[in-house]
Length: 591
Image (cartoon, rainbow, N blue to C red; front, side, top):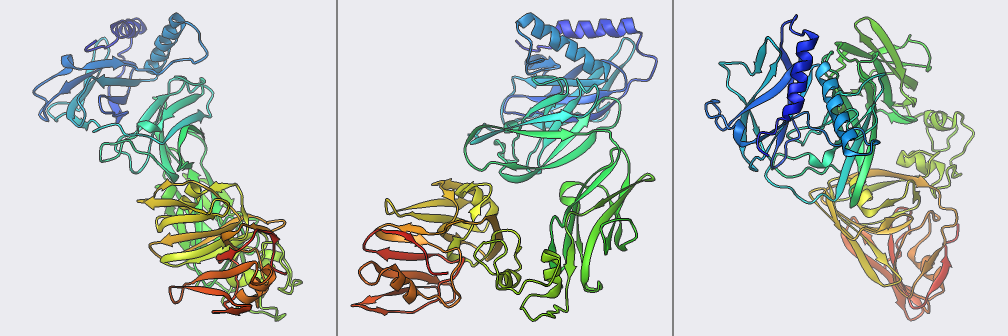
């Protein structure tokens, strides 16, 4: 039905305002937002200085001369479901009317304009009316605002929903909007509509990009939320949310917001022990200072208590948030030592302090007093002593402590540094991933340089491949864990992969080709020794690797009973194609 302004609700609101005697203060409109733009509708939300009846004028021209309001569909206070616990249409309708009155009492207006054409620009003014006053925005003689509907709906592989919990005693009726950097318009929800009285439900599947199609965030994405309570200026909150990259019928993300709260700052990086050496240190934090112009100062200290440290930087604005909450600390003038980083936020005289979770070792001298090939400060940072000699494997990930220092990985956490080149790479993961990942997840972690990832299913002797185009994974989606893989990249990439230690890394080899890697092998272990350990020429026919330096496949095999070909070293982190004539159970190179 055209021009569906919910007449009964509008009349109810007007009568309510008249009985309340509203109009003692001057009526004004602010915080006007265009929200929930789709292919056939858009919504607007704003704040009135007084409870008022909302309406809208819609035009087909930028000058606001041709009004088409009667030709479209207008709905005041559109809701999804009201209280989801109610049963029966009468109770549901009563609840929606009560929710509309609550919003109006707060001075919050929300209208939906529908029955529109896709990919079309429309123009509008919003109106707030009391018994004695009417205010338009934009006011004459200024021209109306514009909005362009989306082009077309596209398939969404993962329908992402967000449930926002508002930490407040009575937030029902507040408006919450959400957007990302790639979205043209935000989506919205009302606290108490389709959710509990302190929660708002938002459907991110209704975000659209600049091309007019549904936006589908993937990987870690900053989502900006605005909360409006009708009394205070709207407050902004930024959250980094990890979105699935594969198919999902519906994924619900939970966000907790403390609006209009006391200022807070939390340093989140360095998040663990960080051996900076002579390099700069990245400091990150999350903060909140609603309605206050706050500044942040960063310091370093020799302990993690008190506020008597040395200044790193000062007068860092609290806004912008999310991606802006970062500082690159140049340690050039800092003496060698282990330090703790903290930040102090000054929010209009209120001081809030936070220490980063992990200490930092600045080490230009790289002193090694016990001559164990591990820098003293590195040992002190991770082991709090110089008692280890470098020959052990403290985290049981197949790399000795001295090797961890060489790779600058964490000797307390099973991990591996993959230094990948542009083009083809034969790699292996010597750890089990925690939490478990599939190839789509791993592709998102590797980033935009990954073109494809493959593994060999030895049982079926078939190759499974995940293709990546424009950051979007497609094709086979297989589990990723301990074992060998082919990676094709467009540029050099260095990444540290973490997980849990592999308890018994013995592997079963099938007759035919096997793509494998090993948790840890002796430094002198070679392809010829591997062939011999397999059982000789009657079992393993060849072992192959990809030489990154020459760009060639190297093959060690047999001529009669004698091994021939390059006798290359077998290394942790590389994968190898082993060809066997028979099945081999529980193969494991000697320790």
